Length: 490
Image 1: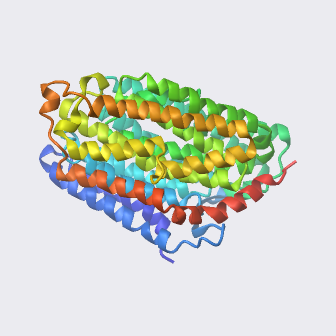
Image 2: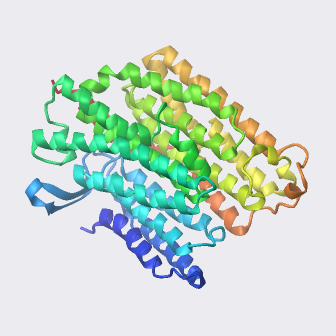
Image 3: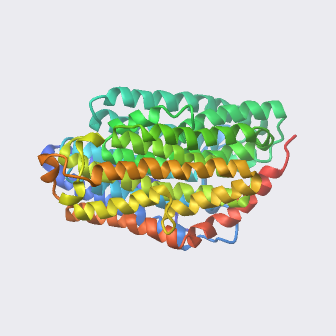
């Protein structure tokens, strides 16, 4: 059998290493084309995962298994189910988008910039398909390095501060996670994640493991109150860095809940349901109010991401199939919407070199095609029916209402807040009188920018109008997941 999962990991990494061979500034054009070819190749090798995926089973598919460190029973063990397969396709597609986005924008250290994204793409695919605890941890930690470089080298004026904050936050959480992995090995004599689901654990041990894993993944989501690294990272990161952060890296946090926290410590997870729902609602509602008062466009969308990811954790912890499926659709949807909004901000920043809302106004007069596309993404961020933003939030709210009316009501309030901060941003930037001569001189979308945003617009509309293919992939896996987490380990 063709090792498609290994190809999805190592093809982009190999392409990234190849790109580094063109480090001279005069070779920048070659670096760009090789990076694009590598990103496209990395996406093409993931297409068989979608074509050959069996939606009728929750078992791991495309499994690859080889001995790595026999002494400690550590294996090169890969596989995907309905929770992970979609993220590999999503990550590989977004890699093409970020290489495309930086095509003309990045003029210094082009080869290193492109290589960082390609290597990170392969590493993150490894995170989503690793079924050995040590292998997962290696990939989980390794992805910090290219993102640290992307923020620290090509970021804004405060890039070093933002990069260090991002690195230290995520490293702190992952150290405790490593302790949890070692403990699980000590009681099971294996690092296979699926075997850990069957290990009996006392309630006290489950609580400690839950806390260790929670810190590692809650920081990644990020959940309130460990979200403060995200706005700084987004503001200082280059546009491509913001796209990968919002579209993929945050999803690793949500993925960690269904792959580690809930099935390994099901009794602790059920006992802490109220705590998780409270944190999720705070993220959804409070962070929505925080977003309204932002003066920086990137920071506003960053806080919006925290609010929208609150729906993901809420969907998991209402303990229903509808909620889990809604959370997964919400993660896929948010990836496309947030990526598109950050790209829109990047388009304006390339022309005016400002992210402050006050510096804009009347952009529709000079950039009508851009204004139309940004309107679509703004409506999707609000949750307009017919866009992908509606589907996930609707499913989670419906599941929440079935569990408890007031939980659903609290989540639904965020729809009003989302409309408030998104439409107010759009109105101040796009409509009104032309703010100044610099705005009047802004040129509409180039061909590259137009098609880049059009690809994301098609995905937003496709999921909004016909979400069934995504729901079908998740459905059986979600049902089996709920059976797994409903069994007590005591």
